[in-house]
Image 1: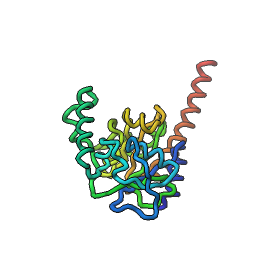
Image 2: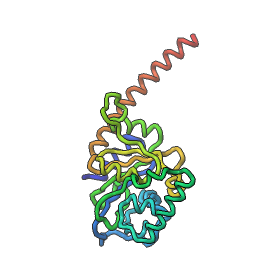
Image 3: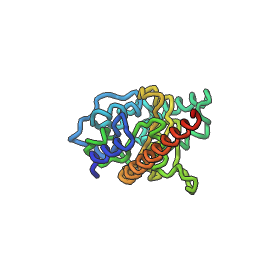
Image 4: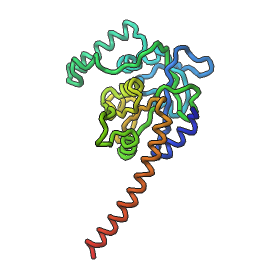
Amino acid sequence: MDTGQLAQRLSAALTLTTPPVALSFVDTAPVDIPTTQEMSPAACAFWRRAENTTFYAPAEAHHNCPIGHMVMGFQMPDHIAAELGELVTNMCECDYIDADEAAKIPSRTGQHVGIVYGPLAQHPNEPTVVLVWLTAQQAMLCNEANGSAKWSAETVPRTTGRPACAALPLSVANDTPVMSFGCTGMRTFTEIDDDRMLLAIPATQLAAFVVAAEASAATNRTMAAFYQDRKATLTANVTA
């Protein structure tokens, strides 16, 4: 996989203002990639750091985020499991989630011990999933590229909300891109702009998605030119 070329093409097709980020779930700690020495306040905060640098974060670096720790599928120590239980209880008590939702939140499977984070363009490992920040207009293009806009589609790929990180295992498990409107935690810890949403693309579908995104962008440029001409014609008729 030529991640540099795919990152460039994806950024150009969607006119991204932030670089795509790649995550590789690994079974052993890499010896040639710097290991972060800091625990992140939330798993999603690593995504923003990865826009500019490549690093390895072991499971324990995610301990401050019980939900993210669970969703990323790390083996959970007893004290983290207890914190998770307290957090879920608080979420239920304030009606943030229903009691029957907690056990159904997607979680990554496998025996991985950590994650390699970094810009897709320079990612040293085979990615597991790629993350992209989208505006509403960019999300429209991705929705079309993913086939979600087709009224004839038999199934509609998922668009999720809280927790935002659940889009990652959901996309990998279903082998399809998944969008998330995000969650309050994501917006607090990533400090992403309020007008952005998240797209998770499983690496197995990245090349095909890039091709589809380029086609969607080209089609919409054609339609935009058509609509601009029609708008000018109709406006001229009204004002004549």
